[in-house]
Length: 261
Image (tube, rainbow, N blue to C red):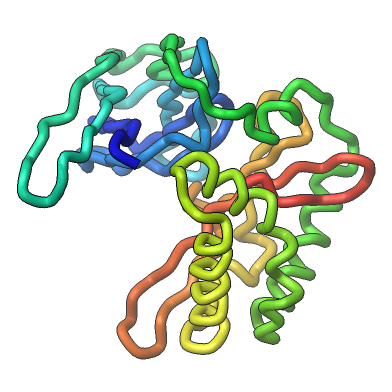
């Protein structure tokens, strides 16, 4: 692949969540720039980018008055690859900026909420077809049971039982980045084996009190986050001390839970 579509984002004043077309891409830590490829979240035409401020304490609601000035900047960039011997600066397709002053009250804590029109020809990803549906009354309970089951399988090292949950999304990733699906599957399988054999899942992920199951647009799509809005599923490598994350969104349809990201 000789072109990569990237999202560069930074927020000042308060931590935030970065969202694209309903998916929670990452937590933005104030003052730290984030750069990530976004092929697997993008659709042809209009794409919605959001920066949603997080409460400064767990007791504060997302609709409380801002205690400090906040600014956010997000750019959509196109990086062309011309080989290791030639550095090519990315082209900025869109540059978005937003700010709010101390004492303001933002609607649903959205510091930035913008639509950009991208002339891309990616397939329509599965999560985009799930978003228009309505969530069920027992979605959270089903997701909690799913998390208990999948965490037990991780602890038991049952890689073969875990792989089917991620098959569809791995296929989408291969398509999005022009990769061989078998190579993507092989790499992901090796990653799961490493997590199960050489890493310990963080204790915080095993405690249901730390689970934050965030519904997206009152749909069956949910972001699976920790207490501080970080990815819930995290491991620490016993050899290097490196922390691994497995960001996850799940969908609930027909009483079944399936992985969307």
